[in-house]
Image (cartoon, rainbow, N blue to C red):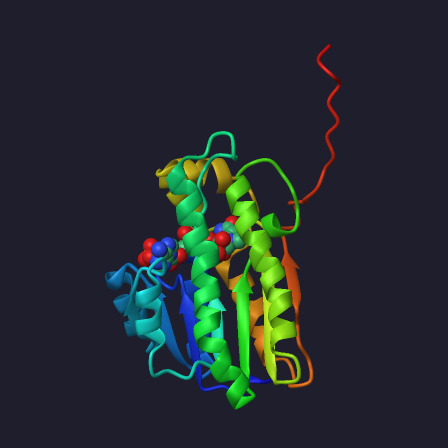
Amino acid sequence: MPFSDYRTALVTGASTGIGAVIVERLAKRGLEVHAVARDSARLDALAGRTGCVPHTADITSTEALAAVVSGLDIDVLVNNAGVSRTGNILTADEFAVDEQIAVNLRAVLHLVRLVMPGMVERDLGHIVNIGSIAGVYNFGGNTIYHATKSAVHTLSRQLRVDGFGRRVRVTEICPGRVETEIFGRLLGDREKAQREFYDGYESLKPEDIASALEFAVDSPRHMNVGHIEILPTFQVPGGLEFERRAS
Ligand SMILES: NC(=O)c1ccc[n+]([C@@H]2O[C@H](COP(=O)([O-])OP(=O)(O)OC[C@H]3O[C@@H](n4cnc5c(N)ncnc54)[C@H](OP(=O)(O)O)[C@@H]3O)[C@@H](O)[C@H]2O)c1
C-alpha cells in the first residue's frame, strides 16, 4: 500500500544508525512516527528534527513495550533495534546469549504480537523486520547473532501465513555491512571499530536501507516485497571450508 494509506509508524532502535534515518524518512513521507530507544536525549533531538514522538524504553522489557503501544493503532511497524556481541558459542558469555535473544528476537515477537492483531482487524498494515545476511548465510563470528537473525528470517515468512487473506504486508530487509555504531558497541571502542570495520571499506549507509524500506512500503497494494538482501558491492557472503583430519 502506498504511503497515502498509512497514518502511523513505530520504529525501534530509533536513536541512531539505521533506525534514526528510517524515522526521518517515514516522517518526511507524512506519517506520525513513534520512535523507540533507551537514549532519551538522542530521541528528543530526533523529535526536534523530524517531529517524531519519542518513547524512551528498554525493549527487553515486555511491560515497557506494552506501555509504548497501548492505545496506538500502528500501521507500519519497523523492528529495527538490534545488538551484536563478540564470540561464537565456544566463547560467548551468558549476557551475550540473553541480551541478543531479548533485543533481536523476543522484543520482535512481542511487538508483532501486540501490534499485528490490530492490523489484521483494520485490514491494513506493514511489518518491516531488519534482519541481516547473518540470518541467511553462515560465516565465522557471532553464532548467537546468526541464530537470532535466522529466527527473524523465519518469522518474517511465517507472519505472511498468519496474515493470510488480509492486507497486512511483511518485508524482511537483510543488510550486509552498514556504517553505524553497531561494531563500536560490540567492541566497546568506537574508534577501534571504525578502523577495523569501516576505514577503507565502501560500506552501506543507513540511507541505503531506508531507501529499500521506502520502496517496499510505497509499493502498490497488490504487491508484497518479502525479502530484500542488500550488500556493499565489495562484500560477498559464502565460502566453503574443508579441513584435513589432524591425524
Ligand atoms: N550495521 C550493520 O552492519 C548491520 C548489518 C546487518 C544488520 N544490521 C541490523 O540493523 C539494525 C540496526 O542496527 P544499526 O547498525 O543501526 O545499530 P546501532 O547503530 O548500534 O543502533 C542500534 C539501535 O538499537 C537500539 N537498542 C539497542 N538495544 C536496545 C534496547 N535494549 N532497548 C531499546 N533500544 C535498543 C539503540 O538505541 P539505545 O542505545 O538508545 O537504546 C540504537 O538506536 C539491527 O537490527 C542490526 O542487527 C546492522
